[in-house]
Image (cartoon, rainbow, N blue to C red; front, side, top):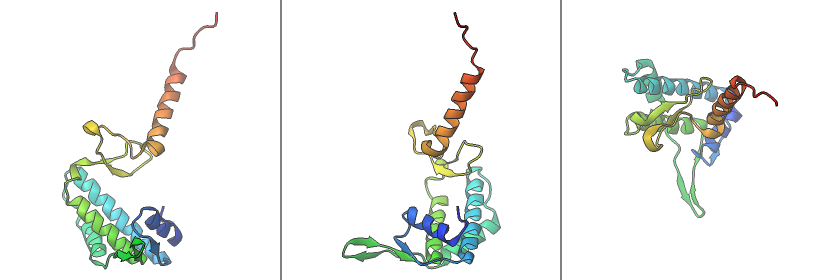
Length: 158
């Protein structure tokens, strides 16, 4: 998703992390991708009960040490302006909170083999299998239905 500075900034806006962001550069995309991969490595380590990868820790912590986006109170409510670096620092800090917080046991990776999204499973019985029904869940269920229909014996016409 982070293929251009514009797409990266759109993700920051769409995620609700910031309300406005200054234009980004190619270096911002490279850094965000590096942090994203480090977070994924750390989440995987945590999910599997393994020790954190030290290089991934260093990447995440370096990003988290930078100045985050700071919300401001305005006459119309809360508003957060940021640079791409501040937005990424905010994401990194949220990852630190997630990976050191109480939701660690609830982290799961999507059951769709083509998806690598990780989500927090707060469903009843913790039996959720996909990152979302509208994306992966419907695809998997539709494919399973088609496979059942295809393998079902054809009824003879009378």
